[in-house]
Length: 88
Length: 243
Image 1 (cartoon, rainbow over the protein chains, first blue to last red):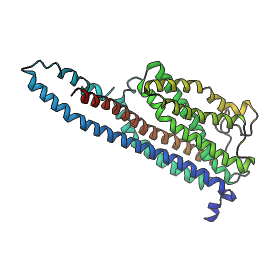
Image 2 (cartoon, one colour):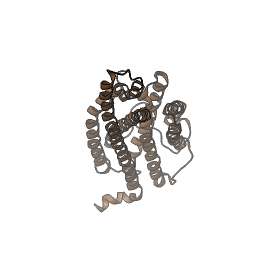
Image 3 (cartoon, rainbow over the protein chains, first blue to last red):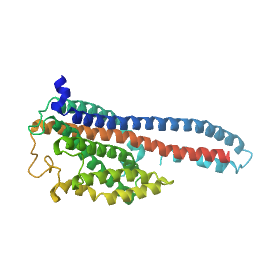
Image 4 (cartoon, one colour):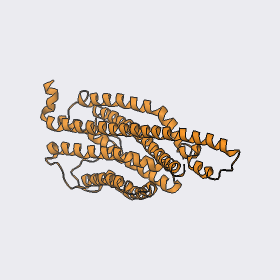
């Protein structure tokens, strides 16, 4: 076993090469996974903020629609259209 | 081609693909490490330093493979205004830079005992160093613009200009006198190395490729999520301003 780790006297060159490769590849994987998890958590948080408000406003505009033409609700609901905003 | 570049379709396809590429990467790299460290003989001239080859050569192949794919994506991004193509190049760049760094450092660690020097400014080594700087320059350029679209455009142009470096790297060992040895696997007339060394090399190379596919899918999904965050922030800000 010590013979294996000695690498025929070249241990100081062989093991750092394998170590660096492992470090870079595992590090990149970890950073990428962390970035993905954080981005997906932010998406969920933002959708959580948005959805109830939009539902509330939709209900509100339904009730007010009968007796006013409510010109001010039309532009406010425009940027929150769900189908257009979610997927490009 | 446009059908596969639809983001929703990509998310569905990549979710199906991911467990297979991740599993293949684990199996291939374990097998590759076993073969390179235990299952292959020391070289009759280079002794055990030849084991550095099983990292160095696949990493060098990947550095060119990833860059070429990014340049193809850049062309698709410029010609067809493809949103996924730009995101692919952006997602792949750090992985390509990582492989190039591995290639450079392991080459240095191999050169020190075998050539008697850590570094020489010859054609092969210098052109690979330029490739590393191209990766870093692309990453810096793409993130230097407030408007991601403009950053992607500038990055695409850099990638297409930099593609001239790829054949220079490949043929540098034939065109110039260099300390680096000429190709012994990807050459006319077939590989010149023994199968006991060729098999571990190819297993590691396939493992690096599936690793790249796995991590690039993860990074692409993160980039798509970032795009979604931008549109969501915009619409939340719009709700706040008007409501």
